[in-house]
Amino acid sequence: MNIYVGNLPYSATDSQLRDLFGQFGAVSKTNVISDRDTGRSKGFGFVEMESAEDGERAIRELDGNDLDGRNLKVNEARPRE
Image (tube, rainbow, N blue to C red; front, side, top):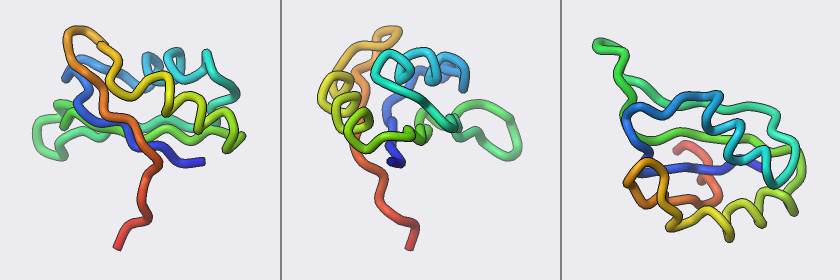
């Protein structure tokens, strides 16, 4: 299951996302999106979880939760158009 994570603190890292979502099940991939020119985080990322059930639980538990003073926006990622 591919999950969108928005409103991330600009200091967030892939390993921090892996630890956060790892509480709910096996994480196969994390990707904090960064600006091509500056290398600074754009404030969102994606997490791939091996189990859809674990992913849905992570979405329910983490959506709206605080991470370093920012309320996360967590939902199932939509396919790129």
